[in-house]
Length: 269
Image (cartoon, rainbow, N blue to C red):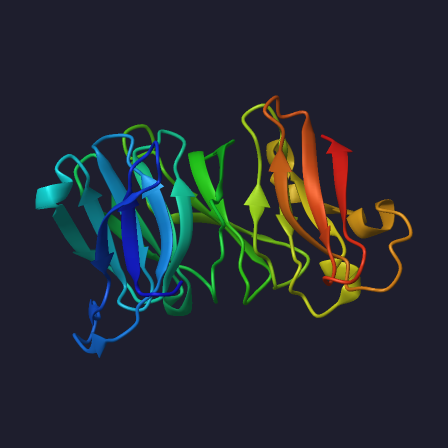
């Protein structure tokens, strides 16, 4: 997050090639911000570009690295407090949360412009988000939230499902707020939602898992911290589910303090 800049480095040596400040005007009120943070960087699959989220100014930068000595940067004004995000299933559209504005921004990396800005509930926090095929609405991207218990599903198929593209098509109810990450896998029928920052230990030490083929039946609770065994004192917050490559195992961090025991718990999906 600090200093307010991004660095383009040599891929082999990691030697800095150029350093670019992110200081500038906000997207909405055109006020100068002295220290806007870089909140996410992803590489475009369509062009030789990095997509850079600048948090406090609410601007997405398309940084073309073909000619670093004559750097070309396209600026897309969106909404303030951009945070993390991820690709739709085609790797064309980058969906990212402007979390304090309660919006999800959609960037078309092929056409190099914003496709949509979608209103969602309080403080979305997708991590990279989760893509799956919805039985009714086709391909969707999903985000959980810090500020509420909702899992928001957004349609991502403008060609095949134009009526639901860039719309909130369904909202699921999870265990509670305080979620940081949501995860599924193309080979899995499950959707996992963590809640490590929820004030309830019962909720922060477990995860909710949905059956993608039957979302209406709600979630099942997995007591991940309990499965970690006797870790002694500590918050034992369960955070950031990650699949193995095959999609048949999912790994959870059980997160405690520096001087306390933490753990990894691996679950057969």
